[in-house]
Image (cartoon, rainbow, N blue to C red; front, side, top):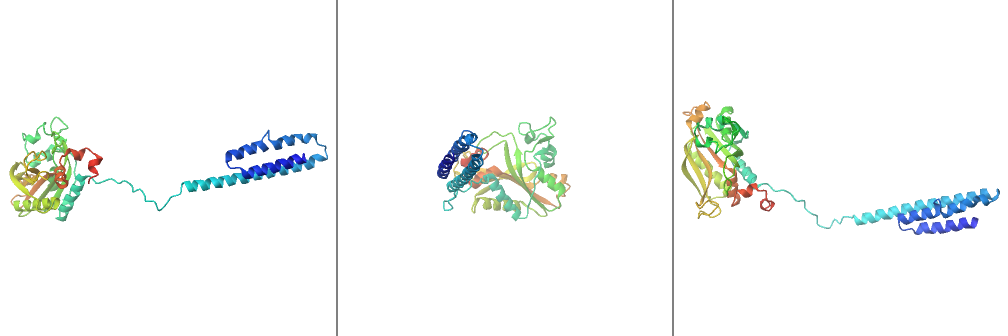
Length: 341
């Protein structure tokens, strides 16, 4: 038995020292120390020994078992260390390899144009105001001198919430001008950007939901020349020096006199194309001197104070600013389009 134990110890230690995988190590453990293992088989023969031989063989068997268990633990730690080393090599980062830049979003061209407009007007001393998109018809129409029966108040043009036509989705940001006249001290210089809603058919230059920027100045001795000078400066700051504009007489109930300002079509340079509907010009905004009735309804004396106001479509401004041919591109969220800006 002594020779058997020595042989088992020698063979097992050699096998444990040469093992190359956790699975192979576990097989060797079962082979030598399992219930049917070689060492266990030898120990089952202890009953055949004499009473004098048992203590010595028992001590030798325990020594062999301890040596094998220690060898198993050593081999296990070695395999774990080797596995960790391989993993570290496999997951190593080569700092000399160029990294992958994270893909960042882009600012929407419409909001880029809005930020530029804000910067221009803030630089001229204007304050930027924001207001509700659900509005009272009183502020959207009545206080702006658009009485009952005006075409813009028709159900075919405006989104109303009630049968009395008193609550609506605002069709312009002009109610913010009224709110400013009611709440701010004179003189007033404000712009009011925001979403507005009208029952327009979708085409290259129209949408039922779009954005406006409206502005207003009320001060003493304000004239139409101030209005035209400011808007020409705006056009040149947005579209570049030498931008061609024109002012056409028009009628708005809240301004008198009134005008519309056009910019030469960026697509055709004035020759006529689908973007400008063959006219060579794109309407940019409507404007005029604030009607005395509007001032009176805000308890502002038109004999002492005068002012001007304008309203421009932000999408059309972005189209002219970035040479976009079709307004629908602005709303379609096509990444191929948006990544160009």
